[in-house]
Structures are given as C-alpha cells and as structure tokens.
Length: 225
Image (cartoon, rainbow, N blue to C red; front, side, top):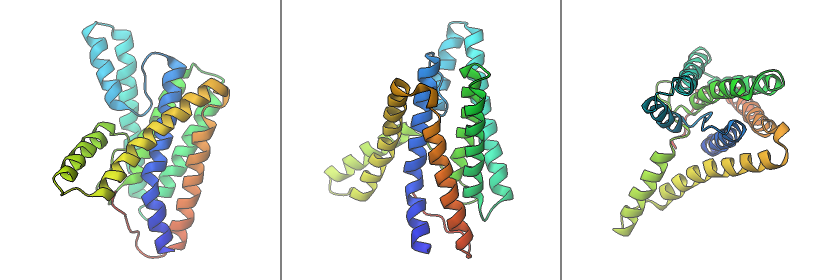
C-alpha cells in the first residue's frame, strides 16, 4: 500500500495540471475575453493592460478573479491545517463540491460568475500538492517548468543533466497543454457538458486519496516532485 500511495502521489501533479488546463481552456473560450480560471500570471498581465487603458470595469473583473483565487488557496490551506492526516483527500473533495456547484449555477447565472466559482476551486486545488504541511507547490507555473526544461537541457549538453528530471518537467508542461487541448475539444463538441470531465477527474482523485490515506495508518509520506 505504501508503494501504491507513493505512485499515486507522484501522478497527482500531472492529473491536477490536466484539470487546470481543461478548466482554463473552458473558461477562456466561454468568456472570450481573456479571463483564466487558474492561470493567474495571465490574469495579472491582463489586469495591468486594462489599467494602462483606464478600463476600470474590465480591470475590476481581473482584480476580483485574482482575489477569489487567493481566497480559494486560503480556504484550501485552512482545510489542510484542520485535516492534516487526510488533507489531500479532503481538499480534493472540497474542490469537487465547488465544481459541482459551478455546474449547477451555470444554468442560473452568467458564465463570468461561474468562472469565479471555478477560480475558487482552482485556488483550493493548489493546496493538494503540498510537500509538507508548511510548503506548497503552485500547479500552473508553466513559465517555471519551461525555464527548468531550458536549464536541464543546458546541463545535458555539458554532460551534467538529469534525464529523469527533464522528462518530469516536460511531462508537467505537457499535462497542462493536454488539458487545454481537451478543454478546447470539449467546447467544440459538447460545450453544455464542459465542466463534467474535470469534475469526474477531481472526484476520482478525491476518492482514491481518501482510500489510500485511510488504509495507510502511518504518518503521511510526501513525495517530492
């Protein structure tokens, strides 16, 4: 069971990046105005652009979504601190509940409001990948992945690179891109069910985590990325 737990935790970054890519793509295509649900670097850049054009109404949307993402991460951290032993499973269960709420609300409110709800869920999801109870890893730091790919390629050229590490960062970046491709495909085929695939994935992750953490009686072991 310990090996199964390590294996699944090693897969989690790729699975959650896949989810983030899907919801970012879905939200962006729904709104068609450059608002991302989990890519906060893009939202921050757009905020600066809107401020430079004195477009306060549009800038306020980005300010709101950045604030909601922070509140989501804060909520996930509070959940983790109150559920130390099972924090990953509990956090992912909470993410699934919020995504389900977003699916329900899309029939009653504009999709911008739905994107705010999804953004809250994505902020929470980032906490599921903590290395320890004090340290967390941001999920959608694509720039960092690409920088590390460049660094590791340079090290490989001089005979000092780590092939496993290079493949790992390529896989992380690829998971995010794959999620975006899936999200775009969903929007072209079944847009009315666009949030069901990421919900199904987060529910599956939550159930697996809760099962593994319940059956593993010892202190949780965190695997490094």
